[in-house]
Image (cartoon, rainbow, N blue to C red; front, top):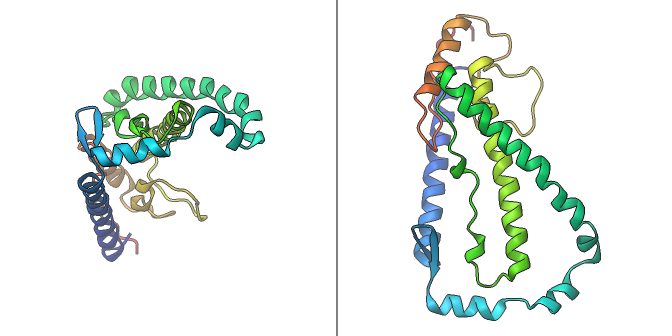
Length: 209
């Protein structure tokens, strides 16, 4: 990877962090405030939310029949999700300290806060909590796998890969073998220095361009 591409990637990462922070600060200042584990809205917004809440029978009529029919299938997925959660957590708690990889904070990815929204009825809140858990768990597991890949094999593929994780862009180019062991060690050192919520940039030197 040449210096120009590396510089662009680092600038993109910084800008993405700044954008996420700015958006969150804007939302917090306009709509809500976070106080510990609770999220509080202004009284006028809470009142407007309550007026928008859908009652049980209205909710039942509005639901598409296919949504209700497939619910047993959807919620049966909780079993493999819980197993994935357990296995991924056990893996990183057991192996990451041995590899000297900074552990992934599960709470950064699995965020359950939609139950504070007054315009959702009890069924909507249940659905939202389930979706938040599933989506957050996949992201959490993906980051654990991404750090594992960075430790063992930080090499890009020859073919284009869709849906690659954020670390992939910093990996070594396919076929770039110069000083591989030294650069692999640099990736591993960066993992040990990882800070929560950020990806530590990896600087490696290559004689191949």
